Amino acid sequence: MTEVAPVPEMDEIAEELSEWIRDNWDPDISLGEWWERLAFARYAVPRWPAEWFGRDWTLKQSHIATATLRQMKVPGPPAGLGIMLAGPTLLAHGSRAQKERFLLEIVTGRSNWCQLFSEPGAGSDLASLRTRAMRQGDCWVINGQKVWTSNGQLADNGMLLARTSDVESRHHDITWFAFDMNQPGVDVRPLREMTGRSLFTEVFIDGAIAYDEDVVGGLNAGWSVARTTLVNEREGLGGAGGAVGGVPGARGGMLNSRAGDFTVASVGQSSGTSLVMKGRACNSMRQLARQRPDSLTPLVRDRLTSLYVLEEVAQMTYRRLAAEGGRNPSFNCLGSISKMLSARSTKLARDLGMSLLQAEGMLWANDRSLAGIMHEHFLFSPASTIYGGTDQIQSNIIAERVLGLPRDSS
Image (tube, rainbow, N blue to C red; front, top):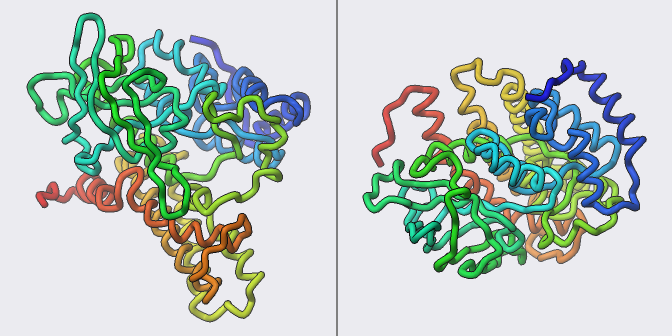
């Protein structure tokens, strides 16, 4: 295990990283090269173990690094599910060979990941999934269908859940595969949304291949591995927005782009979808309210105040998650609480945005102005109560694991 120096105080983290950025930032290098510099300096994911490109920092200390990257107006680490979900799952359950195989590509942005969990008949009830992996010789032949796969068309690898036993026992015959998306038998079809975008896809798997070295956490032990993935998903969706990054992997088309084009100043707030995903809409609503003072009715003022309160409570919850770790018995549910708060603030922001736009809210503004972003936010906002586990699922988790209520039999 690599020896790590004592973690510095918060102001020292910001000062140290700021100095490193001044010495290493060049807006004219490629985004891929910038990500490599961040990764090998161990600033891309400092919360990860020092042995695996991190600094063994706490979540709170990592947030200081994220805030510093934003303040210095440089791109953050690769966006997407590699760092958010695949990396933490591999760190918790992967073999050393799997960590060596995947983690460097994740942290440097060379590979992009998608989540192949949900199916047409297995959404909230994920344990009813039907995708099957059957052993043939030295490999696994996989057949099935996945849906609501975010950015599946850009992914190099997938976090795939499949049944690997002839005798189904819901939670005990499921295996988590690190699945190669770049192979015959994988058909990714974009799902066009009301926004006009295709963030989600459906994936048809017909005779695709995986191997024993792709099994993460053990054969038929995928449910416990998946729970790690899902906990990180809830925490990530309910947490603070990170530094501005970009889409990793060759399919994303950004690796060779100029790094300076992905700064906070260059990217800004580009879409209503990103407004929802970041869960920090209040500042945008305040800006829109200043542009339309005639819309500031008492109801609108009250909604704007309520939105501010909701977002502050969500951030307090996330900071508590960062500070308390596993010492609190409700720790494993703080991600669910934070995710629900984020979904509720998203719905309130939707209603507030339409109130500010008034009659203009009925007309589609096909531009990247703040008013145009509000229209997309309105259309995309219902997804926030569904992706990452529905509000009902999060409520059940809190009811049963924190309040001690009996299991929901409905």
